Image 1 (cartoon, rainbow, N blue to C red):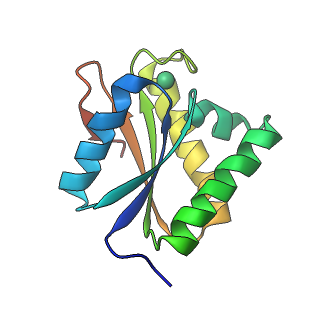
Image 2: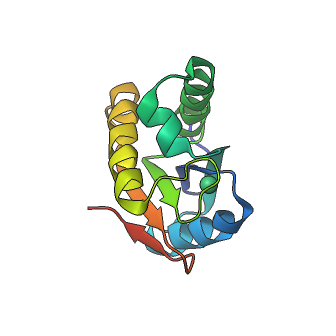
Length: 128
Ligand SMILES: [Zn+2]
C-alpha cells in the first residue's frame, strides 16, 4: 500500500538552516509532494563511521517507514556547510556522504540514492 502523493526520503542534518532549502530542492528537482525528513547532527559522519549503533538502527527504521509505508523511491543524503555535528570540510564530507550512501544502499538495495551538498549560500548541489 502506498500513500497518495510522491514521497521522497531525506537524511539530513538537524540544522534549521538546511530544512527548507532541501525540501524546496526536492520538490522542484524531483517533483516530491512530501519529504520524509530524517534528521541527526551531521548524519553523513554518523553513517560513515558506523559507531553509533543506536543512531544507525533509528535511521534504518525511519527509512523503512518512508520506503515501505509511504512508497518512497528515492533516498537523499545531505551534508552542509558550517555543520556543527560534522565540522569536516566539504571534500571530507563528500567522501563521508558517499560512504554513508553505500551503507544505506546495503539496507535498501532497490531504492535510488543521491548524495547532496548544501553550500554556504544554502544552495543544494549534487555530489557526483
Ligand atoms: Zn549540520
